[in-house]
Length: 624
Image 1: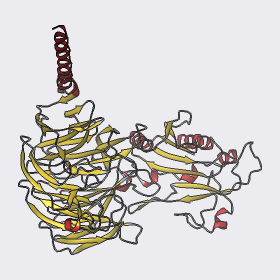
Image 2 (image 1 turned 30 degrees about the horizontal axis):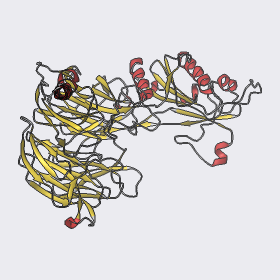
Image 3 (image 1 turned 30 degrees about the vertical axis):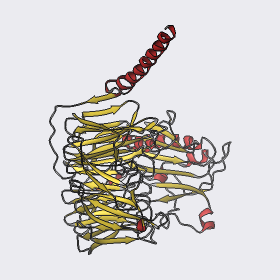
Image 4 (image 1 turned 180 degrees about the vertical axis):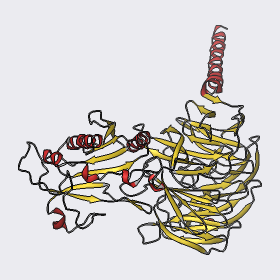
């Protein structure tokens, strides 16, 4: 009898422990009350008109920075944005943040501690986010919200979104239906964005499955969703692999059209209003509403590593691509659906496009080679005429994380660019831009008169160069243009040993004949016999990267420059208003004096760039 009591006691203890573990897991470890940080709003928001800023200079209305989050799933660590219904949605691994599009003020947000957001989508007035528990990819949940208030609509565990993009974290939804898939990626489900219930099921064609990952393997709009499929022809295991594009009606799950593509790689898919763009590594193709192909641009590098930027406006598809065998980029306007090219011209390598109010806005990484700001072109879709303005920020489109992005609404332009700061993981910077003061100078220079730009070759005097042991050196100037505006004075000055250029048979860009004649305070060739001690400076270049309307605007530009650098250290011993040492060595100094931003580069000896930068700062503070 005693043994029975002991056995019953052990059994009871075991049951109690198991029950305790289950309860702890269910009501503590998985409990929403401690995992979730969720804010909502009752404040109304006014939708914005579909119009961008007028041509001319731009100013920052507000900006926000979102830090990168490197989660357990490689590749899904970007930051993505959407402007809709008077709000800006920011989606990152941290969760969702929704702000007022006009002011940047907080509206609502949602985060889950110990979880990472790996996807999101929106349809009509609903937003749905997909989270996975860190360290356990089998623990997943979809969470749906009212887009305006942030109020929770439903949660559904175990559901997987269909074909999440690694660059935008988006997956398709439309007509209040969210598209999901099974574990084998061979079936599509339509889930109600209102209730979370499954509304329909669609098996993919035999031998086909959704691409599990890709830069942008799918996309959608309210009335159509398109997916890249990895298919084996004939359904055989040993059959030839080939990608296909499947377009479905999100409301019913019916197949609208199905097209074969030209490679076996995951395609890049972009949906416009009535047009589907697909790039598969062999060509860029444009399909109409019914799946008819009306445009094709062939070449394995036609879109580079990312999707070709494209917008649809006034019945024209405006797209930017890289012609096969050419070095640059080209913009074309194609009539839909005839496929007739209405105009075509060479353009900079635009990082992003947006359209609003019958205008196309194009983000260029550089206003001009050698100048610091990015640029914004406003393109007339009818004939391709373009006006250019500097963007009040600098950018490096090759930085990882946020893909450059552009949107226009409410008389404003929204731009997101990647940055290296805060280090080491970096961040995405979102800027809301409005029309700025016109100034007295050209819009291409932000309203600053060309006469305000100093001569880069006058920023060092003979005394400065002799002190650097640069006797016998020659100043080689370079000039720059911003759109049709050509700056009359050199923006960059490189100092070379006399005869070096002649030996190489080179002529620097922008150099004019007769440039070697002496200038006041700065001869082109120095012949002083008074040699200071120490090694001569080598590889010296002084560049005026920007002249802003105000010191505050110049400070913002310098901050944007250092934020795009993997290594940047503040220097307080240069003598300017602000200065940064950039790069792994001390060979590059970026400084601001008033409204001037100047970069000094010197290969050797160590510390030479800082010494020269002090001289430049002094000359700008005390102009002759």
